[in-house]
Amino acid sequence: MDIKELQKKPPYGMIAILFIGAFIAFLNNTLLNVALPTIMAEFDVKPSLVQWLTTGYMLVNGILMPASAFFIQRFTNRGLFITAMSLFSLGTLLAIIAPEFYILVIARMIQAMGSAMMMPLLMNIMLTSFPVERRGSAMGMFGLVMITAPAIGPTLSGWVVEHYTWRTLFEIILPLSLLILIYSIFRLKNITPVKKVHLDVFSLVLSTIGFGGLLYGFSFAGDAGWSNPLVYGSISIGAIGVILFVLRQLRMDEPLLEFRIYKYPMFALSSVISVIFSVAMFSAMILTPLYVQIVRGTSPFHAGLMMLPGAIIMAIMSPITGRLFDKYGAKTLAIVGLTITVVTTYMMSSTFDMDASYTYIVSLFTIRAFGMSMIQMPVMTNGMNQLPLSANPHGTAVNNTLNQVSGAIGSALLLTAMDKHTARKGEELAAEAMQNADPNLSADALLQLKEQITLQATLDGIQYSFLIATIISAIALVLAFFIKRVTPPKTDELLRP
Image (cartoon, rainbow, N blue to C red; front, side):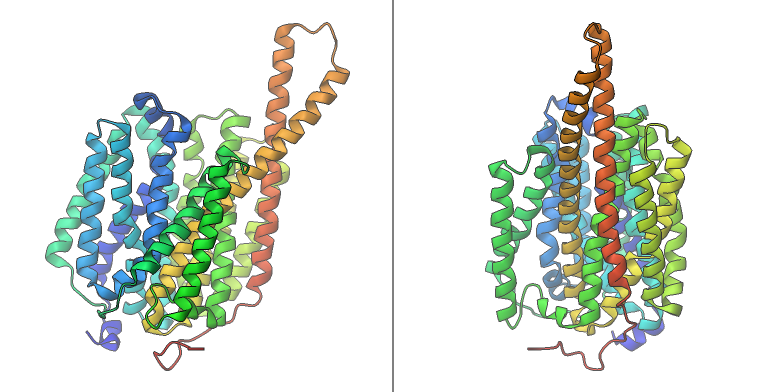
């Protein structure tokens, strides 16, 4: 189909199918987080082992996303979506009937094989179907799916696990995914061009080792510690793999992932801001639930519910932000959004204390979500707008891969910073308490004192991590001042050295 003709009449029905499929896949990303303790009890597994339900899912995503550019170029969008939804449905069914823990892990990995293709495929179709002047509104709707679904996951999971079993989570998803699969078989059409690109197997091996190693190492760093040989060994191997992968791609005429797109300055800037933003975004999503559950003693369900107003604000704002992007560009939106993010993150580091009310915590988290709704999609879309149409699959693949890796790295760094500061503060408070304590204190009083010290040290660690997240967000804010509005190049040829 001719691109100009397609952009005059975008295939809204087909895009709606893809949107629902992507929403379910993204929702599935965070759906099990609150249910992990229940699964640990049922299968009698340790925390380090149950993590594989999220780590394994993330690893498969991180391994397949670099190859998504090849799949999108080589296969039709119809065939790719049907294959992705089939794998996702198969994994969901297997999770429902899983008799053993390792079967559940395999089921999650099969799900991930399907969901890994959803985001790059949908983004590529959106960029192909809409002209530059309307991409903001279109990508704003995509942002609604990308941001809202993972935020709703913990709330839904908390409610379901409290009233039913963890298998019900998959039982809710399966009928929806099967309906989308059946509908797509009969109604989905092909609109993206297909090229007979060559798959370089060695590049795929290097990307698997590289990105897989980094994701694996950083995912376990928070729990196992940086001194664990498995952690620093995985990160070292991963880093070497990524370097070799990039060098190989730069020498190839048909690379698996085209890194020459970084010759376009606004794409490079948007990519850097998106990576920094991913780290900042994960800070509140991880640290706030820890704060309300450990320090304030809130239940897991209410901890998940706390994120719902922020998710609703993001859902409302995402289409509005898209229209504002079409009218004003990314720079103003990014500066306003990042300013709100920096201020609210700093307030979290200084005002989240032992006495902060639940209403105040929810309000601050929601205001921060309002600011963050103005950042990711406008910045990413502005960067993508500078690329030739043929480079869009590579741009989406690079952005999605880096967001996965930066999210894992950011989580590990912030949790490690929290743990180290908590331990140091705990030692200081314990030493101070021992000097001033009454030597005749009862065993119960000593135990109570120890609990108070632990809570205070944990609070200090969380505040310290929020302060680091504030500095990281401030770096992104400075970079936002260099954003310029762009238009695609007149030629579809990629810049060559």
